Image (cartoon, rainbow, N blue to C red; front, side, top):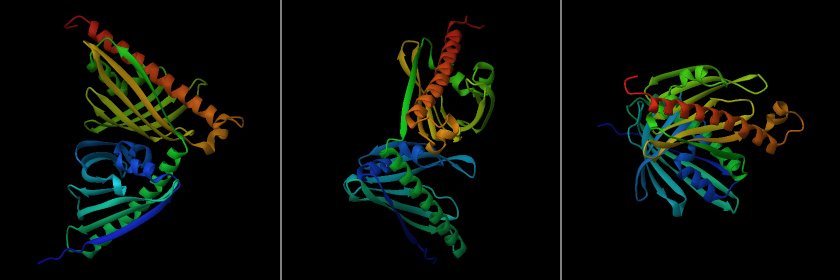
Length: 319
């Protein structure tokens, strides 16, 4: 009879932010793309009481992957327990718990606990898992600290633009989904390359033109949901940004009418503001410039999607 060796680990970090704010970031998986670099999108699939099923889309060795986990929330204890529903070899099983401990009104400690065992009897497998947990836990806690402190200091900013389209959702969604055609359809897109090896998971690389004639390259991973939404995260960013996530959302607004919105969440790379914008630039002027540029491109895309969808809706049947 084989006796499984269960190993337990604990890692911790102190965060200069209120405990309730940090706990909220851990508890709300929708915030994870702004915190953890590999996470592209995360959402709650179902919740019954304090038990929640979540799905996560994230990068692993440069590829987009998705999986589900079960979590149990304990708001009174500022903790969230988790358990993988199906582990991947060489992991036989893994779970753990996030615990946030207040140290003062604006200072807390986050503990990340894991328990795990290997699928087989080879001690090398258990050691491999231990090293992976060590590496990932240190990275995740560091990212949580940076994200919580940035959020507490107000360094993230979010904005949204919306248009109303007199057509159904399909035409709008197809325009946004078919990004491989954007260099032909949008004046600010100089070059585009789209990969979709897994349906609904896209890797989009673009060269975007700016008003001064220069271009910058971005690379995004997109999670596409026909005909409702496309969420994305840039994994190659312009010099002025440390983080950029976005969402295209299509919602019914009436008979054959939808509202289409473009939302951006951005964190500036403050150390490069002077380098990119000049010595007189401030954080406020940099935010205004980034918002103007992103909003301008979004509105151009939204109006092009609107024109495309409305032209399709008005075309004679069979044309």
